[in-house]
Length: 237
Image (cartoon, rainbow, N blue to C red; front, side):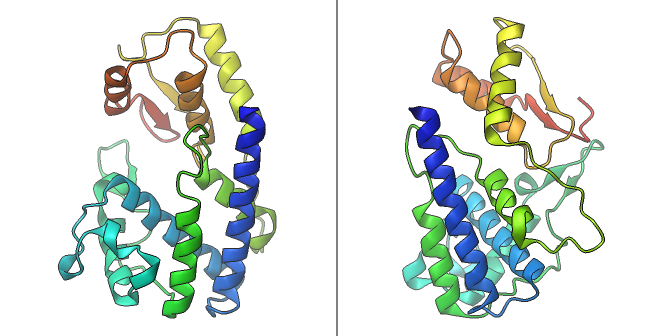
């Protein structure tokens, strides 16, 4: 039942993302199609940032969480928020050398210029934030499933394929079952050598959360996540 519910949530989310892309491309005038994909990706990053750091100050505009209110959205405030978010060290990639690599160049502009289009996009994204308390989905992976399956112009060849969620979940459960009891708060590390959107890492966390014989306590979860036990391709561990 939970698997069916997760599938329905992901399908609805994918459908909304496809509609959002069309909104940005047609009414928003963000063209070509790949540019609309990039702008939608920027909105997703802002949503992720607002959920993780709602109190992040955005100059004179106030905290980030308050700026994503679709009823009072401001283009200038969101543009400034985007520059702050991409420079945030916890919202980019950590390099093996210990440095920080932002998702976009620090001078990358936010290209949506119509307030009504931005407000509608924000409303759709807010409706999909935490859609069900008992369901964990991979929003970034679902987004790129949508983009790569028909929205992205593959001129020159892209060669990108994302593992379906069901396959990643099955492999995570099998792998963890083969490992047996594992001291996850004692330095154990899980790595995804072909990270992509991190779908396998999401699957491992979800399996630990809901399928372990002995559930981790809230303190153990805090210790596990703060210990940086999950690594993508390119990390040294």
